[in-house]
Image (cartoon, rainbow, N blue to C red; front, side, top):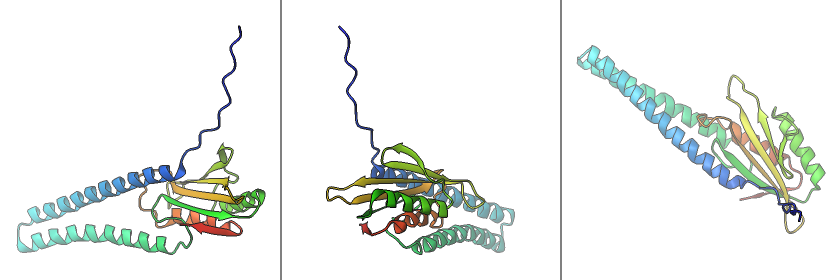
Length: 200
């Protein structure tokens, strides 16, 4: 008696929204860790200056160093948030940026728009397929970034339209301060989709 081959199975589709939320948590933890380390660094520097010169002036200089370190990084965070707000489109805030639109445009036209947007943002186009409806594209290391990864999925909806998902994030989880780059990349793809309606 011969054994039967195993039944064909559907490809395993990763839930991109859940993965985005998991990565968002990693970035939050990275941010807390980085700010804690910088706070300790500023405190140690301030204490070293105050101990080296145990006068009112030395203590004042130590406090100024501590405040200066804090102000520097709070300023960088504020600058990143301001740049992020300028990236108009349906993608979410944060270094892990996720957004979706629906479109009535035909599939080939949608993929053509996706590939054009990827090329315009200097991502690899077309992306590397990871399942029949999903591609992953990367942007190379630059002086301003440790590289980014952009995942795009297009699936048919029950009413015959297409649901386009774009998820952009830094390639390395320590890059939690991204100055709105990933929201800009996700929105560049979503804004390029013809006849698109954003999903909240």
